[in-house]
Length: 453
Image: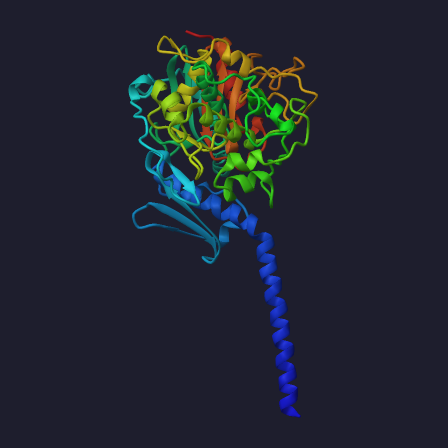
């Protein structure tokens, strides 16, 4: 009798353990996409911060989130890869360092050919002496760094670099401890503005027009009507969700897909092309796959068409595993190279006396057009315009002609043609949720309003 009871208890315990195991496995499989978002970001961040930026504290660039305490990271002995997982066991991801091509998540790049050499001389700011700003300019920059704030608030503000160009000259720059004029910093979605310039370069060569449609051979339905301009303005109508959440297109694209553009192209239409504006990193990556198709160049395209002509010798635009630049997010550059991008835009694509963009390209791509429905008033074609389609100003303190490149965690490049002004602000500000608290709008307004000597 006792033996029989023991067998029954064992069977019950076995069944209970099986149920628990199934529940755990099921829970893990459900949560795995979100876990992979965390481990993929951590792996790529560690690879790029160390390999591209030459820094040794990648964990300091991880924004607060519930996964951070449970992430375990490791680095290959030769620094060729960085890996991250949950508890060292679950949802592991590895990013591979590819030299001047940066890092790719999931697999290293293969067979992408030699990369264009980028000499520094074409960027006049690279070797410019450190300027001595006027008292008023220095005070404005100091406020952008939060010198007037308590230490905890200054740390939360997170300003790492401010650089000011006026009249084509470097008039002020300042860096946080641990950062210098030669430290590349990630622009995140400021990459989209650079992608707009890259599209202009291909258009200038005659290989692209913004009215081009029929952009993917598999688009045999209404998606065939999507134009280059609609990808740039994020009015393609493709189904999208930019929220960094479980199973959303943006997290799937960045952390699960080796060919991001093909993933984006597979999305169905949610709206008729040209009728609905919705912020979409997928649109920009799809745009750069079109640029790759038109030129026949993938990994090297940004270096050949943008970095070399402007002398952006620090710039690294990381591709996905298919070799297409991740034009939505992964452009690294020093503040002086980011400033050159802003100055190039201010000069309407003329550099060292040579026209490199179609005439009027900047006026067109920084104009916010009226759309039947928009989720992001002021978004133009890769840039954010201060003057909205209805004629009002997004930031009344700034001149109407101001526009900017905006990136995650407080990255900004402001261009103000009427003040002949470019302002770069880079930092790590994950808790700052409004432009006003970021202090960069106040900085630009102050500088734009100062009398010029």
